[in-house]
Image (cartoon, rainbow, N blue to C red; front, side, top):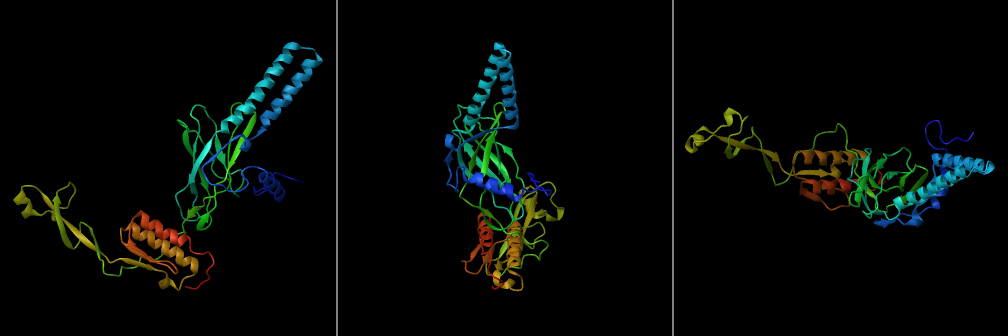
Length: 339
């Protein structure tokens, strides 16, 4: 027997083929460059279940009014029918004139959901309510529906959780923006399909070894209350240890001064692909991704060496971390186990 869903919650192959055929006839048929404007040719309107019930109810009222020659009932039926037709136009106008300006997301490690942000703007003179977004069943598991409620002064954004499975570029699926306002009798929807892929980082290794020691000529230090060398004197702060107080300089200046020490961190950390030859290809990528995060967290300068890529660093900071993780994420998926 044909069902809308299999026991495991997935759609059957026949249903998916029908959906693919229907989507092939809708706009846009291929990914497009943002920004895009939504005009009447891209908006589709169909009655909801409540709308079908409403139509059947009006049909019954009309037949009864004509059968019994009841003019007030016939007038009421025509008024309700006109209101229903007006709601179809109003539902379409909720989407017509909407502009999708951009779609972006911050990269995340593979396996974590990607928070996709869709930016929209429209004429502030027209009030738009009840706009929602989903993937229209394009993904195997349902995403997060989020209302476009914050179109204040004609601008706003919506968020959507997109599942990630592997590192590299992730194509944005066709997204549906829809509404059932104002009366819930019809559903108006449109599609947005961005051609700009999103970046997914490699999954860092879990419970791996610590970041290797530094090598090179540029040694680093950081301030630490129990370091080895005195760096400078500063004013006393509540909670400072008594042993850190510089009593003689404090007496000369008539104020409490505290010694600030520095502790060596070692030289620049070198994260070299060739030194992980005993690991499998993807395991190397995961370990290097973990070490990049650890070095960044510890505030250490690091450089990354990958085959076929120029050396990155030494440096630190958000931009350097992104450059390193981006290079790791975009390594070819199938390079074998060689170096």
